[in-house]
Amino acid sequence: MDQPSIRGTVIADGVGNGRFEEECLMLDWARFAVAAPEIEAEGQRLIYARGDGEALLATVRGDDLPRIHPVNVAIVRDGLYAFVIERSAKRRDLGSDGRFALHTHQDPEAPSEVMLRGRARLVDDPSERARVTAGWAFEVDDSYTLFEFLIESALLGVRASADEWPPRYRSWPGWPRAAAEGVGS
Image (cartoon, rainbow, N blue to C red; front, side, top):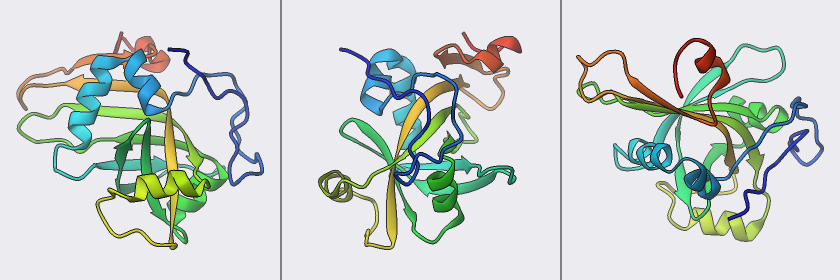
C-alpha cells in the first residue's frame, strides 16, 4: 500500500494558517496500522479499554501554554477522530495551530500507555462527517466540529503491572527525542 503523506504547512480552517513548516510524514489510522501494526493494535486496545474511545488531548496555540482536555475519540474506517465543541478552547487550538498529543488513560493495575503526536485535520466533508457520526458514543449536533488526527509519531509503553519498571518502549517512526534520551526503538 502506498503511504500518502501530508507534508509542509498544515491547512487549518481552510486558510493554511498552521505554523508547521518542516517536512514530516503524517499518516491516517489505516496507514499507521500498516506502518506500525503492533503499536496500532495495542493503541486501539488502550483507546477502547473503558468501552467508548477515551483519551487525553493536549493542544497548543501560538505562544500560549499547552492545554489538556479529556476527549472521546473513535477509529472509524481509516481515521482517528474526535468531535469537539465549536466554541471551546481545544477547537480554537486545533483550528489555528493543529498540533496535538493524544495520551490514553492508564489502568493502575497494568499501566501500559500510548501517546500519539501529529496534526489535526478539520473535517468539512458532509459525507465523511455523517459516516463518523453514525456510530459515535454520544449525540452529535451542529455545535460540534469534527477533526481527524493524522499521526506523525507514536510511543507505546508496556507495563504488565504497576510494579514493572521501566516500561518497555516501542516507537514509530523512531521517536527522535526519546531515542536521544535512550527510550524507544
